[in-house]
Image (cartoon, rainbow, N blue to C red; front, side, top):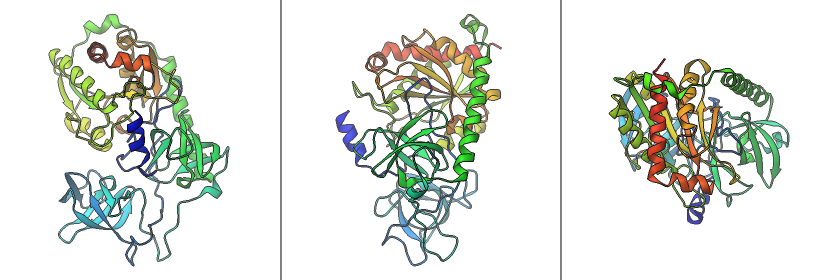
Length: 429
């Protein structure tokens, strides 16, 4: 764990692995029952171009950091593909639109997802730059004078690391996204302790926060959404495991999403050093076997530890395949070692709550780890999913007892069976 923490603290505070997280590059965990990421917004920030990087017209050069990167005609995941770039290609960035960068390398010109680029000096591209709307100099995002203890604020960068304390030497807990509304509860040495509308908390560099009326409105909207969905969950009837056998998975198409992957490890166990992205994949493989044995068809968002599909592509896979349900598998972490248990996160009362209730029933008592029930989860992979979707937290890697249980193959098999049972129960209605 110590060596992992040392390697993480060397990273910049603006993180590029996530489209997110938005989730995540690393899911943002917190003390208590709910384990939720910050809500991802769509606002655009104007950020500083580092001295010496920009050309006279405020463009800059960047390097591709993925094996193959689609170049699209306009900004957006569903626009026509006009070319591709390979790992190591150097491009000139001339514009930004909500995390998409307009690039040119002489032979190819178009828009790419910015989180796969880094400036040639190694810093993140889309999280740290945007073309100004006029010839005026680029405005710095540092807005600490507008942010004070007790005030509301919006996150101004695409993906910003959140830590357990006010400094880069503290443990990485997760990441926050542009336009996330937060409450600043404490400030210290250029860092702000923040709390989301859903109760998550941690420390973030104050220069990536901006106050004002927009933050107050956004916070109110996010809080109301969480309250409405949580109330609906509390009032909904619980599912009964006695109905599992009446359901049928025959012919059902299920998308399984092992969270994280590639250079995004997720959370790291504090006692035994278990790596979340590896556990996610292992559990998902067991779930796949159970589902296939019961007649279901299964598609996975990744099948290898080296893969790290974007959050958008994970969410969109369900619709493109005509899937019947989507399940994202994760393991949890908290600031305190006492937090433990599983959690079923859902976003939409109308679309997801029925599946969440069905998943909750067999997890309760079926894994050897306590169940924390349901929670509202503003995760991109379920928020932007068109089919019934849940995100499962299968135990706390920050809890010694949970981590020891999770490490066993028996737990993996029992957890996978409970997930398969939950899906079968859902299709019993």
